[in-house]
Image (cartoon, rainbow, N blue to C red; front, side, top):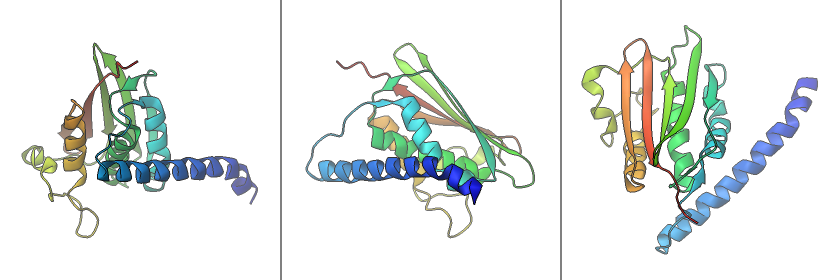
Length: 188
């Protein structure tokens, strides 16, 4: 009980943040339905931290998460950026082999007018013949009933619409790195 009480302030902060995020998602859906644009910038560190907290249930007891990067604004809205990051982090958690200690690393850095972000895991990896197929809509490597096969296709589309890209590097038995490139936000 003492441990649960000690965790309570952090849990309440997460609930408040999640409620704010749900409100943002609802406003984003309404704006899209009306043809309005979502805010086209986000603080990357905030989005990463939020995504890790939201994915905590999938990560718990599977992997340790490490994040590292500089404060930087990217030219992609907070809601869409969080959608991409949550999907990639959850995919990494699902790829972890339960027989060995899991690790997920989210690292980002600036390269000129771009930001590079890697979501890397030490999971089971993806065979080379499937590297391009994983981005196809409705293709999944997950067991029946656990994946729709839409996540990576949607993530790639979101990033491409923002002027970025999504690639992967993977070795069977060693893990996968999803490599994102996003433009830096250069607004006023």
